[in-house]
Length: 613
Image: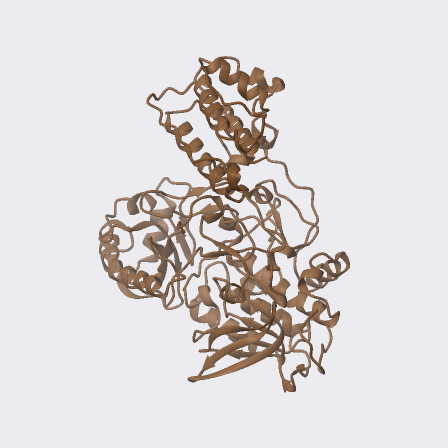
């Protein structure tokens, strides 16, 4: 049930732009709002527009001086697009309106004007800029408003529902919603994808840039009238002054004044949840940029006369919290192109996990054709009256590499604002709504009427899913221990190049098993690791390592014997405990042969499954 209120409940659910104004509810004798949207990110604007157009008196609260968040204050004006198997645009509705007006690379000031104009045209929408959100207002586990500060004065604004569109799910976290941070969910606590400080330069010869990138012999680079991408090999030669940074081949977008914005500088060691760390990251980035510009003048065609103009007011932060919702999107959902009954949108962007430190380069885990976003991912656990849009919604950290992009977030935001109309008019909680097929059918129909694309489809089947080793691949991918890159190629027939392919994977796997069985008390998988001393890893070596690892689960699995012996005994041991089956034994014909990735990933995936059961 939503918070008790009287009067002014819903002026209709027609989603008409600029529709008639409605009266808000009365809560505890005072005028209030149907919906408050926290955060003026693109996701928040989409949520607020959808809410207002569906007849709800809506308040949008933003701490900054402009709407658009990452697109405007973060100056990230190069959009990560999502197209389907037939190159159809997947992210439609309000995002498509923006895309048609602004294009794939847009002028930041024009984007600010677009967001302002859209919000200003809605009589049911009020925007508060330069307003700090201090805390959620709670009644038990129900959120009923926000405590805010503007013009130096604190006040409480009350409502029937809150949509958290802050980048970091700040409201949800403060209200008590459980969450993980960074790579914590796959055994990498403390790891966060690097942040970026977008910067602006003048004096770039766009004609020279275009000519060079179209003729550099690299099919992965290019340029058009307003955007360019490339210089990757050149950027690799840059030696950062701050060793905890990296300069990579930039995404470049022109502004109407002739200047260009560059998304290229990755800053490591920034925890955006810590104001001190965040501010230090901004300072570090600004100190590094002049050195980068000097390097570009000497090494980037067309940048010979480049001059520093400034940097974005905000960092481009890729990752902080990942909330726990009624459903948590998995990497298997994404890379098996799964559809969901409660879809509120689709995505297809590559699963792009950016580097977390100067010692790694990140990974493309794989590239989906199409997947759907469940409404349940927007409904947080434990707190009622709340929806969460944006990159911190209920996605595992690995698939978040795809689902975090702005177009998907705007689709989710529009779904949140529209869902509020149904929930409030039917006096139904979002949690109950997430399990109600009639409610979801209405939501999907209304989103479609608003221009959303919600195709029900048969999931395209990736070739790797028909490989005999795929069950192990899927498990190892969920653990962050394998990736297929842009071509979804897991190199399953390739021989292992060195001992590290086995040693690093099994040691990480066993560490995860230890951590994830902590709540079993005295049957927790013990900490264990191997240290190999030879590089040619045979099938027998894989058997030996897996058998030793499996024997660590003796206490967790009553009746499991402690293992001792050689490769032949190890093979029999793995057979006994179902890690290797008779049906697949012929895939491992020679214990003395160099193992391949298919054999390794299958055995280790089954080892983990056995340990956890």
